[in-house]
Amino acid sequence: MPSFPTVFLNDFVYIIFARRCDLPTLRGSCKSSHKSGFKFFLYKMGRRILNDALRTIVNAEKRGFASAEINPISNVMASFLRIMKFRGYIKDFQVHDPQRVGRITVELLGRVKDCRALTYRQDIKSKDIENYKTRALPTRQWGYVVITTANGVLDHEEAIRQNVGGQVLGYFY
Image 1 (cartoon, helix red, strand yellow):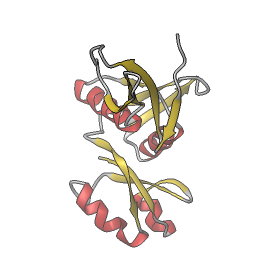
Image 2: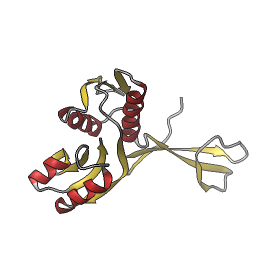
Image 3: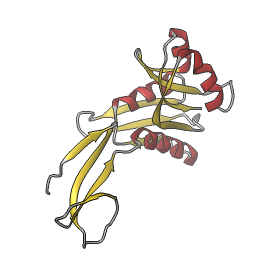
């Protein structure tokens, strides 16, 4: 298998390769044409990994499964699941083989109605967390907004208690 040059931009992995202009395009977007007759394509790999994992959990909950398997994994995903476990929305999770591609097995309780990750990282100040929570969550009674801060990945209650702001990763209820 040929090795392609890889570029890391904005937490995404891009693979760059060239293709003759006269060959049909399967997918991808052409970024530039070269006088040699090659088009250079940029493919986005690993896009929205956290959001895909959270959607897998929601779909497994809706279908009534006892567990869900997630791969690929990341440290942010493990932190998000740790908060969900601490708040009682999932029973447990186990990380298998984190040094390689890895996978996470999540044991479900049937409590998760919806959970989403923001594909963009929205900055939020500590004084605006309560306002954001009321906009993102359906009621005041349940649900949590997950925020990455200088103190680590926290839910909105801990962030308010520690008086720190950060970037919103997502929410669950």
